[in-house]
Amino acid sequence: MGTIRLTAAQAMVKWLSVQMTEEGERYVDGMWAIFGHGNVAGVGEALHAYRDVFPTWRGQNEQTMAHAAIAYAKAKKRRRAHAVTSSIGPGSTNLVTAAALAHVNRLPLLIVAGDVFATRRPDPVLQQVEDFDDGTVSANDTLRPVSRYFDRITRPEHLLTALPRALRAMTDPANCGPATLAFCQDVQAEAYDWPETFFEPRVWHIRRPAPDTGELERVAATIRAAKNPVMIAGGGVIYSGAEETLAAFAARHGIPVAETQAGKSALAQDHPMSFGASGVDGSAAANAISETADVVIGVGTRLQDFTTGSRTMFGAGAKLVSINIHGYDAAKHGAESLVADAKVALEALSDALGDYRADAFDPEMRTDWLRAVDAYCARPDDQAAKPTDGQVIGAVQRATGETAVAMCAAGTMPGALKLLWQPSQGGYHMEYGYSCMGYEVAGAMGIKLATPEREVICFVGDGSYMMANSELATAVMRRVPFTVVLTDNRGYGCINRLQTMGCGGEPFNNMYVDCNVEVQPEIDYVAHAASMGAHAVKAADTDQLEAEIRAARDRDIPTVIVIETVAKDFPGTGLETRAGAHGFFWDVAVPEVSDRQKQRDRYEGYLKQIAHARLTN
Image 1: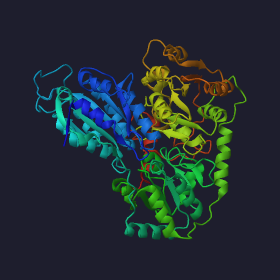
Image 2: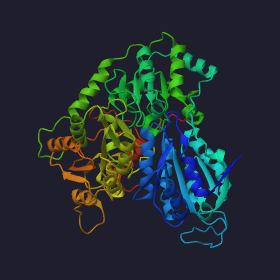
Image 3: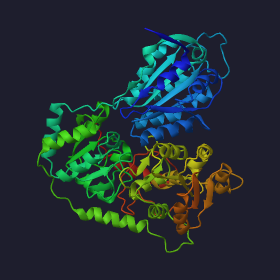
Image 4: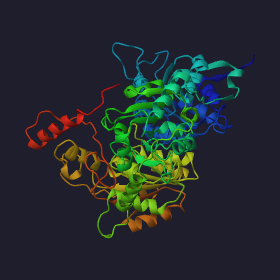
């Protein structure tokens, strides 16, 4: 057996360049990099050496580079991924938030983090985090709890096992998530005689586990006994490529479908079995059928609190079935589990159900909800007044076509978009597992890189934009076009509503007007975005917003459209019924003791609401 003498970093890059998908593409498509001491001499030199077969992209911040990588993987339905490399110290810890985001959302990400010297010869090095009681700890240990696979590379030959294990985790549909290699900086530059066979191309197959026969029979029996079941579609439907299977299953068996943030657009909005958003920010149609359902069938969802109304949405007598590829998620809330790939499970379950059809539901519920959405999103008669978020969404919807993908992550817009955006299949991308402010701009770039044929619309509030916007410059440099709709309500409007309406508090430290500042800020977002090279404009009203959305399609750079909005009749707060919303309780703890009557009254209401929670785990 022949050998090839390479540094450890060179071997890693060469190996990654020949890891292939079933479609004949590189699984790890390239690496985002910000160099510093800890990765510039080792990984940096290796990336340069293999730049013709394994691309390197420079970003502005380690966290947002990783956000772009995660969005790319999500848009690719986990079939392809990106890697990110950082230097030692702050470069590595900047990745913790992004790793947590990928972990929560079950998305693949390869992190190659520079680490201390394995020899400890210059110990402590610049930026080294020292544990006074444990000499093996470095800053990269902060990545352990948010990585599906973690390994510290202290010898070159560790890569022979570490790299395959990392990709095994990333391509495992059940345990998918970030893999972290804490790569000691001296080891990166150390040479080793590698077996030639290590660099032979390898194809990574995404398995589709079939359901256990006993579980399938029990779940089928539960559904056959149901009169009015409902399905809740999660992100697992999309990752499995089960969209058409779900549509056929729902139509054949007469079971309406509600959707989570991750599952939205698995069914196009115009599909007759699509009843819209589930839960706290849910539609009147979806939540009404969920409240009265005798069996609730989760498909590819981890059933978090927004989906279940903090466990208060389903009736006390309702049975819960959970179809999920991971047993951990399938067993939540005491569900009857069906552990399998979503597509395979739905096909097998449909065969087992045969000619079963649920009792007819009232289609007028769906019609009434969509009519309310249209009214809420309609063009404002008074174009001189600041629009609501729903009117902004309506304007964007009218100006886009079938290829449009609406994306967002945090703040006001996720709830509004989940309720009001009417997507084609695949026309929705929401990072709401971690609801990470700052994901939006970088995420939009990642989506466009993954799906250049689609029109990408990034909805972002002024609060999230201020947190992380610098990848606009990267998108300009790389000529990656997408459209940012920046809604300016002068602060953290979503949390302000939660504070004042949801928890009985007073306005404090969220909107600029309620903050401890000497001067109210006048931030020129148009000038700021333009300074990074984006095309930027302020829309005076929704008519101009529509026109600017259409004009943006002809550009090869990002477009930023700023529009001032007003918080009015916000749907999906969980407190009021508006625009077809049928808000459910969201469990956010309310202080038990207060000197204000408003707060005490809210606590009494809170006690009544949590009494309805299903406590089964």
